[in-house]
Image (tube, rainbow, N blue to C red):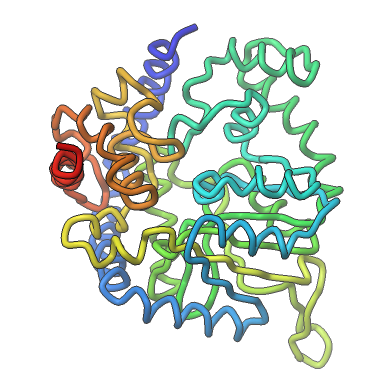
Length: 380
């Protein structure tokens, strides 16, 4: 089965569903204005909000780390995890950006992706093809083949059957896990809390069952308050066509209880340790850039991919995984530089669909054009 079959199936499923969500819940239009204003405020004052986040995380009993580079970020996480551990991870594009799973495996840990799409990509030994649906390039027939060849699972090419078998496989990993690593849809600077939206239930188990919870994501996920953080999760879910989400999770420090004399103590039933590793890796420089700064407003809904004719044709060859599609060209420039993003910017035909469907109103074609201009200047 080809990429063309896989992407047509995905488009026919999620594109009309997203339009239906936006029509059914008109208040989302007001939310997106509020979120854009809040994220603009943080981008303009990023160092201030990083420091506010650090203070808040320490106030709630967590440990905060700011990593300048991808290597520094993975080394921090590797030091927290140690070796010989079972690690479960929720879908995390910054972990993919920095190759965190590979670093932890090299340290002698057993590491499992627990989002179904990310798990399938891990088992297949391939790269993610979409920011939100990393296995969108795999048809159900191909998934059944991969599970049979790599794990010896005899499962028919049926989405319900596949989800059930992977659920059974991963349940044992959750129970044994020593460390859970999640990303964040948004990080609240005022409270040190993270908000995560999901449908599978794997993020809840990743963030609650293991005794150690590590939040690992980019500094661009910071928003001023917990209220705004929840709005970001609402918006991401809606523009991904999956609103309302099945679950929305808030984590703010190690587990705790105040059931004895109303005095809050920690830990309780959940993790005893809460670590937050925020990654720069080009983001703070982008925040100061007169054009690239707008990329930091992206909430990773992945809607632009499904309206882009170049992505329809090229898939994960348009951008550098995990940052594919129109937003991916911007984010390849932010995290890997103009030289790596430039060849992908040259593929853009400037149809403009990405700008029209972006919930943040990011002028993606303008950013891609700027990447193209800078690339041609340094290569001529």
